[in-house]
Image (cartoon, rainbow, N blue to C red):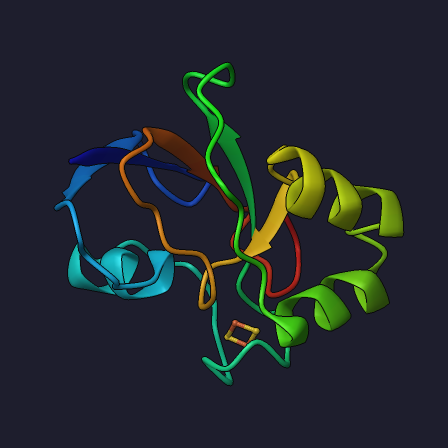
Length: 122
Ligand code: FES
């Protein structure tokens, strides 16, 4: 089970929710279920409205990172992901700082998700 903590200037305090092991819901779906106002439009990795910053509570515990081609392309176009970030993620299991909430799935690692509330801002 993962604890996902959402933090934003839009919320008067941080909110921690549980993602059950094997849960394949995205961070955006989890946020919506708990009425956490992450902006979104396409839900498909194309518009970047749902840009989030993800920090791992235990960065030493490395897990394979899954980035879809769509997410890589969108984050690269935004200037939020470099080729080095992709290589670090795919070869060294080092998670990139920025993700798309509609693509990111928290597995069994505890994370903090930060968003500004401005579409495409993080
Ligand atoms: Fe469009 Fe996530 S909602 S990229």
